[in-house]
Length: 437
View 1 (cartoon, rainbow, N blue to C red):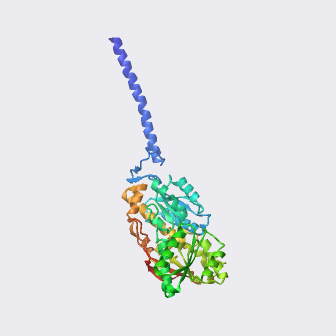
View 2: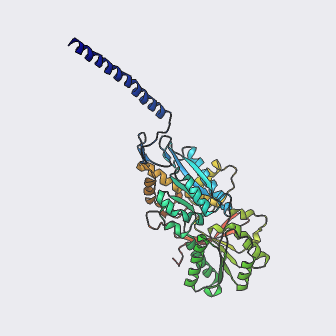
View 3: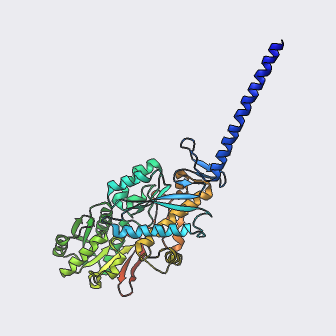
């Protein structure tokens, strides 16, 4: 019995020692985890489920750092291709907005939240756009900029698969038809149709108009073509010439010759600025001076001071546009100008910078509402986007409604004429819905 009691005593002592040996390790492990958390080190989430930040009670997912309150935003832009003259100011608009937010006290996001831009240059190449998307898709909440129509449309099935919203630098009618590509203005179809309404009225009747069009061979150009030609039929206007060109095409002698031989009096331009210059310059040299009406992407503010394109070249140029121009006296413009002055040092004023900033405001407003709702995951962001109704960038743009299908980003467009002396615009036809809806 004594031996048995001795054996039991030894076993109990051994078990006690083992238990004591385990407790310090467990405590040490818990202490290390707490220290890592205090230092802001990331811990691997379980599976692919969204996390919830205990401090803010906000559900988060890909592209959002809950502890640091950082939203990562993707930027797919053209900084080096055929549309870089537009892409660069578009990129500047996003950088100025990000700087304004990160400087604090802007009120654009809840206190403490900042943004980080994750950028890729696709050079207006659809294949590179796809590559850029693949490179950033796992690191972002949404694409704050997907520049260009032909570089955004192919992304639509992949955006849906990954539930990523992409704000396009495009007003193609196809964008509003897809829930993942919300536009911020009326489509090119609306612009072209409204332009034809004005042409017929200003000319004194359909019989006074011989219409023509130059459009680039992509979805942007085809959108303008559809609006212009369908509206011509509605008004009974004769189309005398239709010429398609490549994006950025500079030699347009054959196209201008065809328009001149056809006797065109009013020509719609659904092209990039890199083609607008050669078109107007070539026509001027050939002493062919019809009325030109450009879609939004046909113009560039640099034309106001272009050394090789003097003001007389633009004598008969008009612009169909549904957005504010730089410095226009509309509500919200003063706030933008203050942001530009504070964060746009070394950046040239440009319409596309303004357009990009406005687009960015909408994307950030959606993020703010998602955070306030307690869900800043991709699903939560989409839900907040769908709740957008009557948003107008403080009065700078027509009310935008994202609760509908398709989206409604304005239905009215106007016609402007450049004032080269003051480097601004004159309204020749106010906002109105086109007859060809």
